[in-house]
Length: 301
Image 1: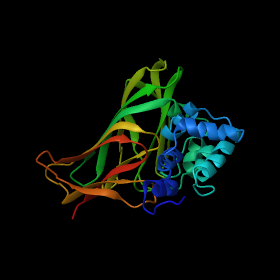
Image 2: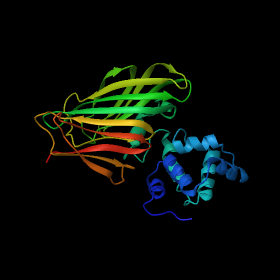
Image 3: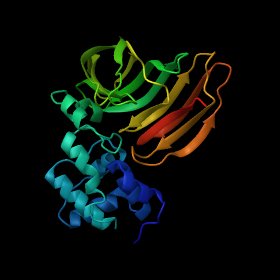
Image 4: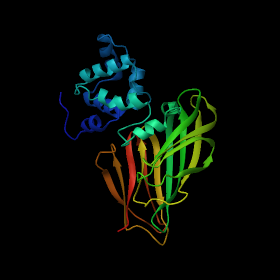
């Protein structure tokens, strides 16, 4: 059974992540999770339909040897190339947090995150995220603001690690400020790679099903980078996303474009021109984002 060039399955197997690729393979082959469970069991591999559901929705990732063996067998049962699914798991198994499909040159980030508790990433459902960036009259990114809403999948979640990267590696890295509804823990910045990693500690330990809202700002204390592009990279599904960029009313760009990408090295798709109105701002809205990059390009003419 072949794979149609340009299909969702072909793109998912090429760019990942694993959850998207598995979901696309199951859909393309028209098999239910119960049937896949029975076929795995017939080969002596026990994976419940619930676990399969978690894998294809990105709520958990196969990491143990027996799970990896199941994924290898899934490649055969779903008629996809050898290593096409297991190959997408290697980045997660090595770092347990960093999705290398979304970031380039992440070795420094892996070092930064050593000792940080990143387990919250897999224990939270992202209900909504709103990013708002402000660009000054010098056409530079002056500040950003983020509000996120999460729901806990299990008891005991008390923190989240957030990662930000400046557009210019070796350039300025912002500071976090105005943290609300949570407490700022450790903050690490690496100017050479442009990464910032910060712990956000919730007010209390969450129970399963409980929601939390957090807010914070990013501010450049000295020099600020040129405003050419803004994006968010989704390693986990998000129900609702808004990206907004505001400009100085006296200095607005000639054109702005929204876009999405499947991975850091993937081409842009769904590119659309945005109207810079009287409010001197543009925005994009995305619902049910499973994985990838949503962004806005700025053209100053």
